[in-house]
Amino acid sequence: MSGGDPVVGAKLFKTRCAQCHTCEKGGGNKTGPNLHGLFGRCSGTVEGFAYTAANKNKKVTWTEETLFDYLENPKKYIPGTKMAFAGFKKEKDRRDCIAYLKDACS
Image (tube, rainbow, N blue to C red; front, side, top):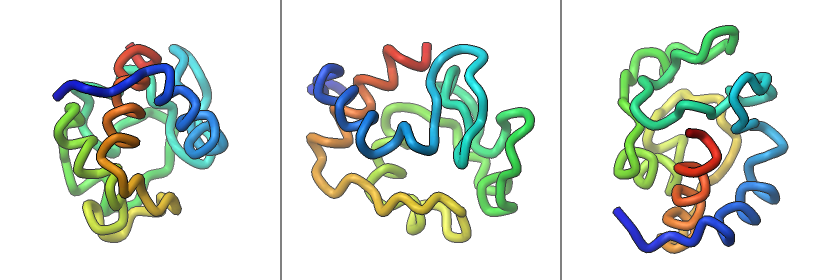
């Protein structure tokens, strides 16, 4: 997957995601889990974060493709998740956010 702009994605993350998530290594959990090391990680496995059973049981491995699908509508992708975010309906917004996360969470 390509085509995302990490600079635009950083702005999207700041306005739509940062109130609930951190990206930096060693960053704390907030309403949502810390996202550092997101790519290649299994859903529901950040230590110290209280996930729903739905997130733990989904056992999705986060890749650009799975995250692209998830970020369109998190509650549809993982029914029972407590993530309140309605999703990025525009493909470009999802690609931009993922491009940012690839840099920020590595």
